[in-house]
Length: 458
Image (tube, rainbow, N blue to C red; front, side, top):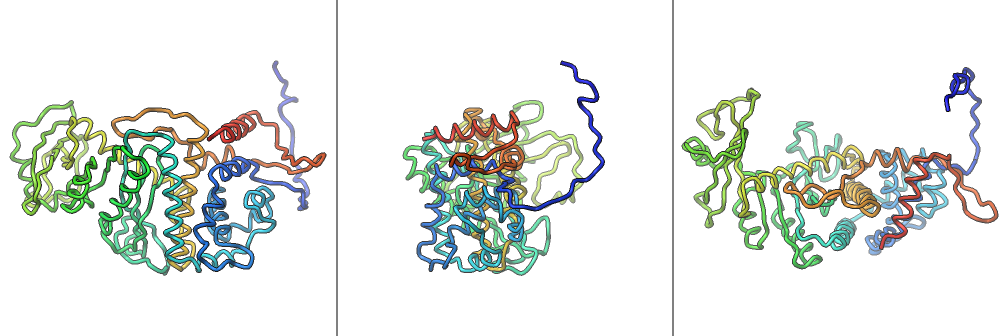
């Protein structure tokens, strides 16, 4: 039916008079979905166990502070002071089980009282939640990506130091080591570190602990590992191979002058396609005990390299080509090895979402353990968003050569705009707790779908 202009357009000139009253309203009606998610995963009880060794606050326990931080980050807020903008929201209070939110100073003091044991326990909670998902998926293989990520402090903060910081050189920072699962796009664990350490610092022990934990929870599963050149060492390669773990690691040209000579002396490269050619060989550096498969890849490029070139040193140079070397114990074809290794770029997307949408890069307080607790809250927030998607939607794909995530995940900001940030009114007509919302068909469909799938989830 065609509508007239008068039925569509209206003239609005006057600004309404503003009145602020207690109307039992909420700006986050979509939190009913998060309430059901928390109930299914028993989040509050899990967090309570992380702080049972600490003296209980007279009013707010540490587990309530962490739960509030998770909700704070889910709503898209960053600074602790931003709590003032929703402290009277009824749905936030109902989700937390509170009648009143703590002051910002109370939250800061609670963060300052956290200790090492608390951080270890909350890391364990993060691992347990992801292990439960892996057990439910019953995967044949799981792919782990290890890499460090810089968190700049911008001010004096305990445990921070000046080190590698590509974006903000000379600024104090943390340089934590992350283990992510490619199939789910979630963070399995994190190793806290200061900013002045090498990427491989503490990596071997952290890797082996993560791998053994997953193997213990999922017997018979095949574990694969991908890493960049910072982790290339005899110690790590030998440890992974001895445990029967399939791996690919980028090889740094700067540390082995022989690699440049092997590429320049090579006359016959195996053709793969119009862009790629390759050869592989069993080789080992002089001080190593065991030979491994080294895959040499040459790629045609059209762009001109404008970086400084030192032809007589380490990096092989040939106009129109780029070179890459990968060490692996996989015995499959070059195409599958290269696709598998290149798939580790998905971890950068995970870091990007963690920092831009879950505020992992925010340094909340001056104390080290307080900042680590805020970081763990951001990681759990990210994992919960991914878990919510996996509980509601079916898998979009099977295992690919790049080990792409099995779901096409909805970004956190999209979930906030379409699902969480919905106005509603909470009333009790006839004694029945009711939340009224605007009759929007898209919002109604999504909310009812999420609630129905969560309630039916095992």
